Amino acid sequence: MSTERGDQVIIDTHNTTIHTLGRKNEGKKLRYMQKDGSFPVLFQKAPGNWGPYLMDIFTTLVEIRWRVMLLIFSLSYILSWLFFGLCYWLIAYVNGDTDDVENEPCVANVDGFTGAFMFSMESQATIGYGFRAITENCIVAIIVLTVQSVVSCLLDTIIIGIVLAKMASARKRAQTVGFSSCAVVNLRDGVLCLSWRLGDFRGNHILEGVARAQIVRFVKKPLGSVVVSYEDLDIQNQDIVLATPATITHKLEPGSPLYSLSLDDLQQDHFELVVSFTYTGDSTGMLHQTRTSYTPADIRWGQRFQDMLKLGKKHYRVDYALFNETTWVAVPLMSAEQYDRGRHPVGTGQSDSEHLRLIKRNGGSYAVTSDIAAEVMHQTCL
Image (cartoon, rainbow, N blue to C red):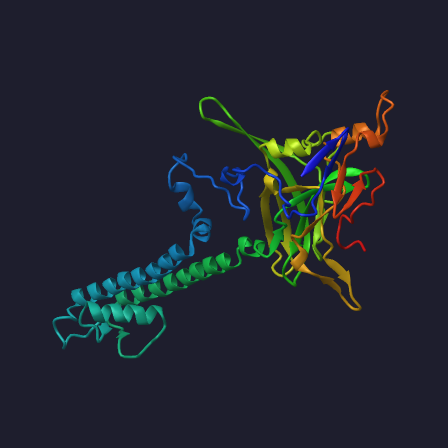
C-alpha cells in the first residue's frame, strides 16, 4: 500500500475505503467515557450511609429510574389510602358503628375496613360519590379528614414536581445535541489541527454554550491501582452560539499535549479525548451538557469534514447526512513538532520539501506546503 523513496512516503487510497486508524483490539479496551457520555464507573463501599440521600430526597427521586419512580408513585397513594382507611375504621370501631346500626355513626355507611378504605380513597381523590360521608358526631373523624386533605395536596405537589423534573431532565435535551462520531487531523492556515464537529439536531436553537476538551491518560501501577491524569486542551472560539453546526478546533502548537504526536505515535498511544459542550436552551432556560470521547482509533489523520452548510434563497440549508462524513486531504504524516521544525529549519539548510511527505489519492499526488488553504473553522462563516 505504501512505498518509500528516499525521504518521501506515498499513500495510495484509490482502492481502499479504510478511513480509521487504530490497533486491532482497540475496541476491547475499557473506555473512560462511553460514546453516549456515560461513565463505566462502579462505586463500592461509598463512605457514609443513606442519611445524605434522604436529606436530599428530591434529587434522589429525580435521578432514580422511571420504573422505580412509577413504583414509588403508586405505593405513595395506595399506602396513604390504607393508612387513613385504617384510621377511619378504628374511629368507626371505637364508636361502635360496626356493631350497632342504630348508633349515630362518625362516618356514615362505613361498616367495616372495606368501606373505610373506599371512603379514604374517595376523599383523597375528591371523587365524592355521596354515599359515605363524615358526620358531625365525631370531632376526631373531622380532624383526620382535614389532615388527609393537607397530606393529599402535599403528596400531589411532590409527585407532580418530581415527574416534571424527570421529564425536563437535561439528559433528554443532551440527546438532541451531538458530536461527530470521529475527530480529524488536518492543516488550517499551515498549522496542524485536531478538529471535531458539534451540531444541534432540533429546530429551536441554543442561546449560548462553552466547549471544553481534555486528554485523559491511564497509568497502571504494579500493585493494580490506576492513576488518571487530565490535561486541558486550548480551543479556538470555545464560546459558541450553535445556530448551525460548528467545527471545534485545537491547534497542535507548542504547549499542546499532542504537539509531538505523529501518525505512527497515534496508533500506538493510549489516551482518550474527552469533549463536552455546556449550554443553555432557549426553550426552558435550563443548563445542559453534552459530552463524548474519542480514542486514537476514532481520530482520522489526513481528513477533514465535508461541507454541510449551503446558502439558499431564503435560508441556510444544513445537510445532516454529511455530519459524520469526511474526505481525504493532503496532510504531513509527521508530528506537528517535526512539521514546524521542517518549516523553520535551524542551521540545517534543508528546504521544506525535504521534511514534508506526500499523500497520493485518486491517481494524483498532493504536496503538503505551508500555504494550503484553511478549512472554515465555523460553518456559519461563508
